[in-house]
Amino acid sequence: MLAVAEINYIRQQVNNKGCGYSDVAKRTGRDPRTVKKYADMEDFNEQPKKKQTRVSPVLGPVKPVIDEWIKEDLKKKKKFRRTAKRMWELLKEQFNFKGSDRTVRDYVSKRKEELLNQADQAALPLEYHLWNSTSRF
Image (cartoon, rainbow, N blue to C red; front, side, top):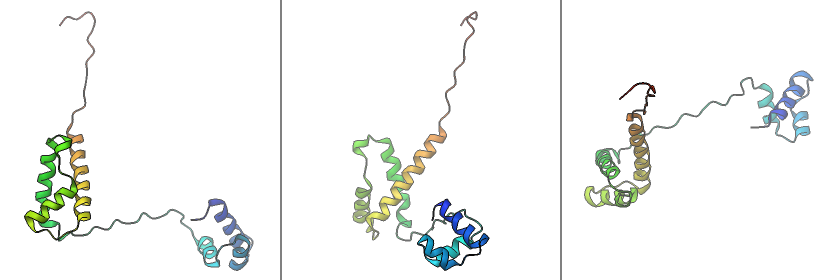
């Protein structure tokens, strides 16, 4: 996207002064199609792109196993936890898993983040009470 000052210049030259797209394009060093695009544009807010959601047919049958392993590992010390690569290797050995290493890594990182967020939401905020100096316990 162009700078705001350049967009304003293009719009002012084309819309107010009646210059052609090619004339403004030569002066600004831009393509005439770019000049036309910004001269005719009304809404300058970029629309957020939708994230693609895909079904994972390879990962679907082993998701409960991976979730169980992640929950078990969260209870262990950090040194003794399974890595995502190790989980992938175990899936290949035990379940004849055909998916890629990257598929398992992405799922594990996303799932760990979800589980940690759930744990943070379950915590209660600490409260304290100030005691009056004249009151006794």
